[in-house]
Image: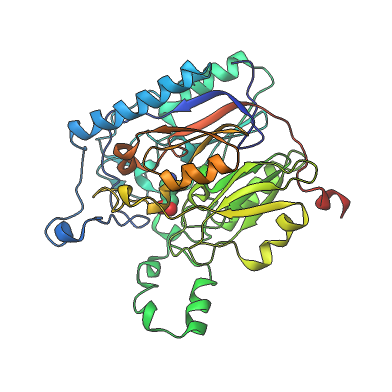
Amino acid sequence: MDKVNAWTEWGRLKTVMVGKADNACFQPNELASHGKINNKSIAAEIDWPIGKKKNIFIEKANEQLNNFANILSNRGITVLRPDPIEFNQSIKTPGWEIAHMFCCVCPRDVLITIGNYIIEASLSKRGRFFEYLPYRKAIYQLWEKDSAMKWKAAPKPSMNDEMYWEGYWEKFIDFESKSDAEKEKILTNYLYVLNEHEVAFDAADITRCGKDIFIQHSMTANLKGAEWLRRELENHVRVHVLHFPYDKEPSHIDCTFVPLRPPKGNKPGIILTNSERPLAKNEEKLFFDNNWQFINAPKPSPLNYPMPTFCQSSKWLSMNLLSLDENTVVIEENEHDLNDLLENLGFEVIKIPYRYVFEFGGSIHCSTWDIEREDSASDFFPTLSRA
Ligand code: DAV
């Protein structure tokens, strides 16, 4: 580790945090989260489980996480790991209490490095209220080592009932029987379970392209969250809000819109996009005017679908990759079509087994937090500077 520095998703990776599954619990049901069982044949027979996950699954996920961490270390990348707390205990604030917490497999949701800033996000799920704690020892070490590092924690939301719109859970009832115009209206009203009462965002709703960062308006990131970032990061980066109207439960941009490499000369920059969740039409222009190309990820591998029974993410974990530099990416071992697409684009593709991690909140990108990359605050959207 030399310094805290990451402006992009693709600069050469030097230091990264990889999550751990120790003490993991099921994500508790609450206003912001309704657990669903991804296996129709047993869904009717069992309720969403509570409490700690079975040791066997924790061990299997840890094997895959540790294997990934070793692969990164063997390539000369410094790998940090969190300090898991006891997640299987109740927590209580003046406004609510919940029977247990979740886990520390996905630092991506909790933390983001933007240049020399480390930002602790303001998560909106009660089961994740204390999820910054497993990373605090590492953050203090980074802060002590690098006197240029800035450390900001977004305002901690109350997570009281007023922060959530419960009507969301009925929003799509009978959706398929509606007319196209009605469907369009519902999809573009962008009302999610997280409302606008308080600042809230998961760090995983953000993606970085040098001088510009993009945050998707989602179930886990509201417009007040984006506005907080805009004000705090003025003179540091430009903050843009993106919408993906066809995603009915958007949460985390890294299965939807994944920048792979920047434009160079005449060669366009590449963003891996999701054919089922295209960017809102009126938000495309900025990218096309600045020589970025959208390339749809292939269909997720049938080898990974259906998703594991207790996985709360979509099949699009397929595109949840981590870039080690602008020519090297790590993907899940079963995603053969994605492998072929990336190889054709000139990438070296490293494949790792990761399916056991899926039910702990995500896949490869989710389970990491990049702390140091070789990159700078380059302007990849020069039309904005000219404007
Ligand atoms: O498509 O379900 C999952 C991201 C999890 N961190 C999706 C996004």
